[in-house]
Length: 307
Image (tube, rainbow, N blue to C red):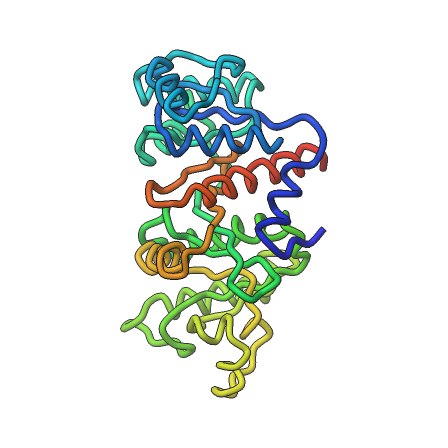
């Protein structure tokens, strides 16, 4: 089923069946805890609390929520809470991990630990799903939160992770735009333009399966049919990109914050590329964004478990 709105995502994640269990690592943080409890109430995911339980109970009490029925593990040390949550995943007790009161770098370091973590097959990258006002479709943005200055090889893996998420959302032949400041290759002044061209060539050679990746391409040409018409630009992705691929973390993060701050849009962001779905909300994300992130991870978990 192709999803066309964030509400579609919520509905798909809450379909009948056993809820996937999510370990909230370092659970004594109000925004993460309350988002997990909201997801539980909606039938999206069952929280397993790992952290300082005394403080977690105080937070829940201030919000008027009873957490006594939830599985809980008292691990006050934050890095220890991450390790314990990962141990629960390796034992098959949980299927997702959500960041609570712990820094993202600490969580990712734990995930990537070769001995006690869940090392990925490729690389980790941030994928955000959103819906622009007036549109009836979902778009994706990557990478706004993990890879700082990815080289060509990493950019290809970032694209691959995002296309996997896009296909999970029902986009059978996703279209991705490699964003840049211009449609021309300007090397060495703008190295990202050459990387974009190379990734697009990889796509043309079948590196990403049934998908179309084009670039370099400015943002307006990626999403606006009117801009495409005005500039007379011809490309199968132009004006209709499903996936926006930022050239670096700075531009990706600026675009992400533009969506969430200037446009006040809820955005579902996860870290893709790991065997364990990772919900790593930003402290500035709205409650709605955190709920949608949980829904996205839960939906993908259910979909992959059912084939």
